[in-house]
Amino acid sequence: MSILEPKIYATLLLLYAILVFAFIIYKLLARRDSKDYTELRARIVSWFYMITIFALGVYLNDIVGIIFLALISYLAFKEYVSLIPTRIIDRRIIFYGYLFIIPQYYFAYTQWYEMYIITIPVYLFLFLPFRQIWIGETEGFIGNTSKVYWGAMLFIFALSHSAFLYKLEPTEGITGPMMLLYLLFLTEINDVFQYICGKSFGKRKIVPKVSPNKTVEGFLGALVLTTIMAIALSYLTPFTLWESIAAGIIISSGGFIGDVVVSMVKRDVGVKDSGNLIAGHGGILDRLDSLTYTAPLFFHFIYYLYY
Figure 1 (cartoon, helix red, strand yellow):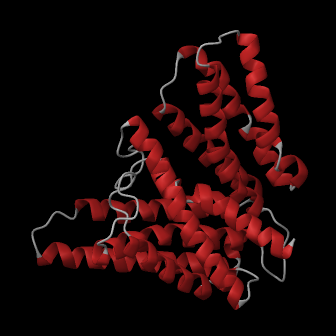
Figure 2 (cartoon, helix red, strand yellow):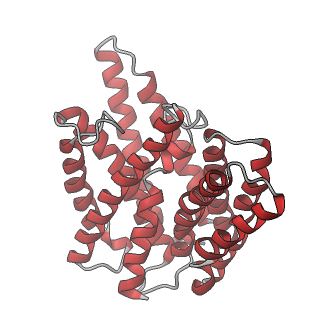
Figure 3 (cartoon, one colour):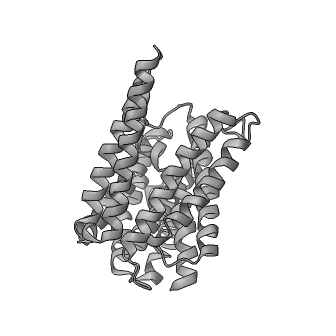
């Protein structure tokens, strides 16, 4: 079982240690002043549950792990569909977005790269307009097809790179589950670094019309800190020092872009959070927005270097 690999469970223990430290800080802050730290507590508790569910879902068994990652894509795509304006007739096309999750993650599991890389970008792309023809509804043809295809690309195809990464053959003693943990750790902690640096030093807004809270200082601070973490956690990868630095830059920059892209979607439909599934965090998309960019970028970086 992957969870018994020393490098994996040591990293998971490190994550729990960080959460315990954060909870202690929350308790000290709550006692020191009368400010409301309810959201902070909710975020810490939610992180504990998310890490535990992730560890059990992904690292106990390979098949269960792939199903778990496919379920994440399903929930993300479902939340996206719930946000965008749709008609009853559009559901006939949306259905095929859900359906294509199955072959996409099957090809990731079997490591059939040639089929994996074209299933959604080519076959779903060609199939959706063909299916629209048989429905015979010309009104909204471009908009509906585009919305479904774009959502499938971002929340199924892009996220599924984490599954292909998970099943990669070991290289230089490093396994796919180790590299997946590296990717997820850095993606999520980059979000935390952006938030902390932005709150502490942020002055100049970087994309004020899309995400007013994002600042140049927050972005640069996270870039530096995430790159340092990328070097510190390089024991989970086959990377050299320079490759670790490059990975940190790719993940930090990609995470920022993924975050603001999904923020653009939420602003377009007029919501602050994509849902309320995760206490203190919002919805699935609020937690996975950065991963939509970091997963494919990091996967192809490591695939080019070592496979």
